[in-house]
Length: 291
Image (cartoon, rainbow, N blue to C red):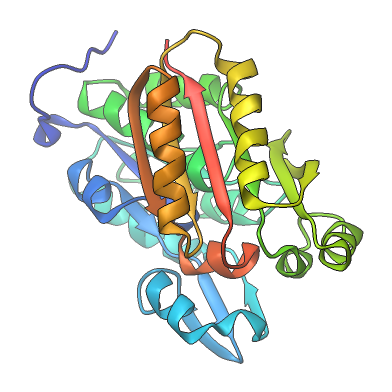
């Protein structure tokens, strides 16, 4: 059994972690745990960018480009293969974590790349979640790898956490959700017409509406109520993500830290792809009971 304590000795890691920019990990965490992030291709007005590489979230918000046509696609197998080969220079095993197969071709793309690997064993795991939910799983897998977990042990941890991670979000500008195809088109249309904001949850690998509110504050209260029911007295790990709503995210973090026993809690920006998909003002709360 692995045990994490003291200073991190990433040089002793035998398992490399691969994820995508959909997790919206911080550069500090990526560097700290030697995580390899595969960027999502994002096409805006016919111009293709790499999510978080040549287009930052700040640029997106400054340009206010939400009204522009956009489309995302899964990274090609070659993109994953490049990441696997880079990690194989030091890793004996590689754990690749993807969003749900229902939502993207990432899993199939990564599996195709894994079949071509010879230098290191590769496991591709569908995490069943996205954004902050996947970020929590990425970080847990990375901590396990640093602490000495082997490939199979790290993969088993991910599969266990996939059933324990909860993700909720309140969408301030629901009209943008219709562009993703991830929620019924009637939901954002009706919400925009009525001036209400949907509260959504990720469940069984898909996005579903769980309520509507008039204000973002009301959405925060509904997310916190849901968290109380799921957490009760246990210690938690939490990621709060936002689309150009830093102050609201910090306020939510303050609420969470004041009410729950947090082993870890942080705020991160959405990547450009996530920001475009959800629209400005979106808040996301992801958590799991740690232990």
